[in-house]
Length: 192
Image (cartoon, rainbow, N blue to C red; front, side):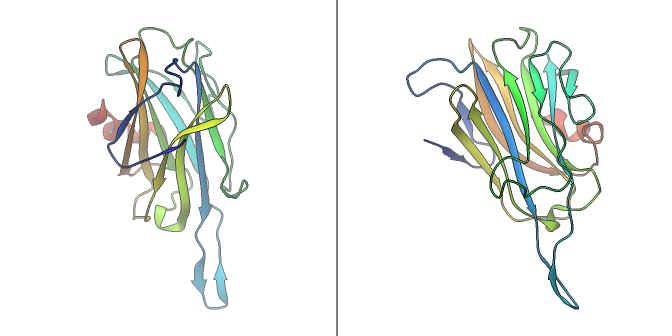
């Protein structure tokens, strides 16, 4: 059963049977919003990019994004860049796979971000979501829906943090501005 998360809500990433999750997928989906024009409504392609920044003691140590598709240790992997969104009609347009058992012990947080590489604002995006899926069985565990677009070009979507021997997901949903994850670092740091 999926938990529909609200901004700031945290959930434990455990299986329904109490077991520990071993692999998760952070899926990102979106569609370009229809815009009214002189000759009717139209859409413009939107290039959103998912990134995962790996932190150790509040210091960034690695990143996975469309130009670096795998973490240096191989535990986090991006499935590839989608330049237009909406392809899956509700499915994942981009995804980042995390093998939680392989994440090095010094990594204590992974922050997931979304940014508009082309600089379009989220006012031009609709049906955007971030979701966590148990990669071993395909079950959606949690979904954070990005409601109402704004005049910003990025979102600090969610983070997974080590809690004892397991992991916890927190929906952040904080708007930011920037075309790349590097631009977003000042906005990420307060959430660590």
